[in-house]
Length: 177
Image (cartoon, rainbow, N blue to C red; front, side, top):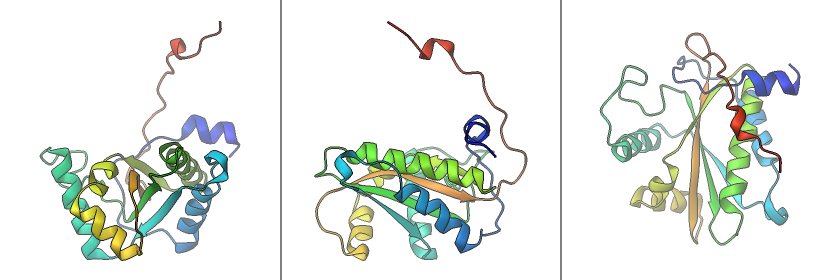
């Protein structure tokens, strides 16, 4: 696929197969995130693959609580839509570009996942998660001190069903003055 094709056809997927992608593919997705531009080359974001089943369950439960929403037909009781791989992007709050750096990492990872035939979805409750006692527990397990911002999770795996269709771009989002 060309870059234009990747950008035009990538969509968030909200139904995943249980099949875990090979570690090599996941590592390539993570590498794309690590190669994302960062403000003043500070590399403030960190990508964490959550493999521990108990921690994944705890994160899933916390995210469902943060959502305050009952299960839905799209995701059932799982706010990660059954994705077999959970990546967490956090960034050092002391860096002025932390949120932007982490956001660019997530964007790069979604594009790379699509190029590799994987499906992904940005799960946007990491900020609240990292501000909770669970966030401190995650940081302690990583051996991190200081203040860290939860930027987002990336649900990653193989799509279970057709990918969503492209949507029309609002032409009012591009202006020239």
